[in-house]
Image 1 (tube, one colour):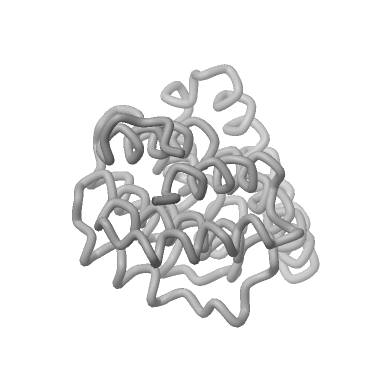
Image 2 (cartoon, helix red, strand yellow):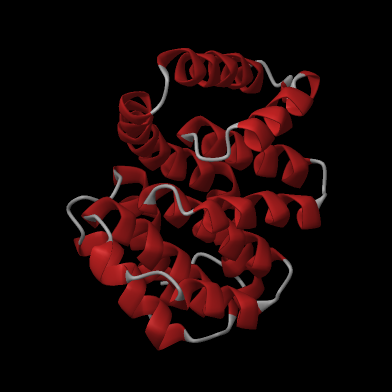
Length: 213
């Protein structure tokens, strides 16, 4: 049974949910990845340099929580320029991308995400950047670019929770392109994935119900 009058309403409902919750789900992956990458960075870098990067990132993160990232965005760019191999610079680039996207500057957001991919510092951080790029391309209705970006992700190397996010994003993209059978398959994989976040499974389950003929 479909809760929506039209396919457009269904797609809009899913997009609204993803806009509100997608960043939170990816951020959970980011916390784990940053913790591991940050530890490795401390081991390989002079303590003072690594500590400075960590401190700067904590300030930036605090400003994000206060919705005042614009006050320190320039400091974030300096960190990316001076310590590009620091995982904190990579995480900062992700914050810069979010900041620019919220201002409607999609080109600058993509530029920051592409910077993360180019640095290739940590596979989990690259994965987050690529999924966020896909989200932007979907918003732009650039489905060809969204598909080509998804194809650059090696699914065999994803952790189970990452696979759930990948399948959900891929399912959303398929739905946008009216590829309903593919969307059903991918959303079902999210529901069956025991490592998927509960709210991600719930929305996938609801969407499956809506896609039932």
